[in-house]
Length: 535
Image (cartoon, rainbow, N blue to C red; front, side, top):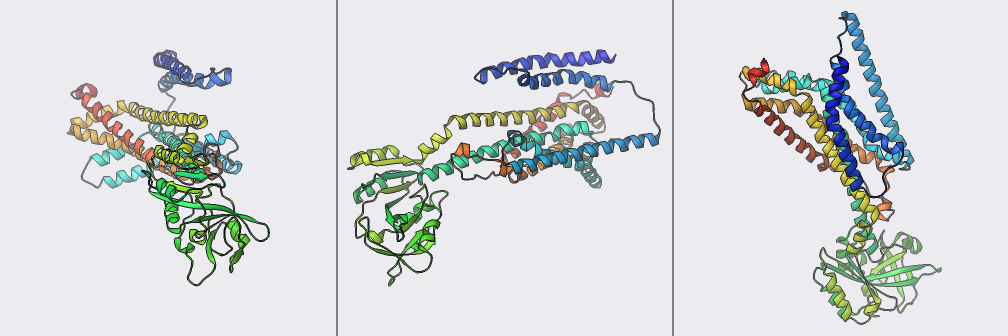
């Protein structure tokens, strides 16, 4: 009876499902610290999942063996087909409209709601899945007709069988789009957080190592040479920072640098405006000193002609002209109103160097501290390393917990994609076994049958790859206004999301390899059972 079939199917699923649920609950308790969930709201997703896993096979078995209905006329069959077609179209249009509406709400609210932000990969993947399902079978039928004119039989048979696959067998492969999109989105956000933290570390220090003296103190030429000779230093730039009062009461920060070394150091940093040494080179016969000004300082000084600056801070009277603008400078990472002028303009005064910037991938920090200990005024010198700032950002509890969740999400998504692919192979095992047995009696050898099975499964993976690529390209453009990573980077500077094609192309390649191995093992394990299968 149908009740007996339902009981047998559900009992077989419960034998595996209930222990798996108990194991999952135990792992959740052991891996996630803190008190366990309380209330029905926290438990219903797991209970619903277990109920579907246990009752689903029984329902499927009973539905498959239900009594057939009376044979209907051709007209009624066509009307039934039209109703199914109309129902499917209405469902697809409604799903696309809901997904597009969710994306619009997500962009307008700017990341204010966690629900829409978390559902972003699903909202983008739903239209892609529907389009792929619509184009999947017609495209394969066209390829099968084209392959019929070729001499080989493998291409024609594989494409024909893939085109004749029912939606029940095609849907598990298409759901790969959802899991791969989730994995790609998670990796994109993780990479954006890492890039944002790196950018924030550059903005805070200005270089790999920043040496700053207290007001009124500075380093002499010997100290500058000693710090620049530390192992690992590739570029070194010294600067003299002084506050200057302009006409009208405005105050700017004057930064005197050597143009060549400063330009080389800026070129080795990230996120700072490049500098051309020619803009800081004084033209012979011209009394005005060329300076690079921040936008605020350029607005104060003006762009036309030269501006006099009275003698102050031990500096002589200067006449400066703005030769260009700088949005930012490593010598003043916090930003502000500043002027960058050549060190030769104040070279005769001999002002002590109070800022030194060093860049290099592997600067010996311990040697820097050793050199600092030998210098006079060591207590007035502060050494700030970018690696330490970056470690403070990446080692914060928020980043650590979020990256752990990201890793678990990626692993779960890839595991689900593998399970879906194996499920599709399992659903088509009986039909594939009978077909391969018939083809074996018609002369196809084992290698040809493996190629045929792989070609039959390949279109579903290829369709998933196309949809996943489209989702990965569309995700950054659609959800970027709703993503705010300032909580991780401790900076208001926006970090763009970039699609990482390796995040889903490599898993797809792995799934294809697993498919080939599984099909080859399946065909070889049934060697010599052709007659039994046919009987």
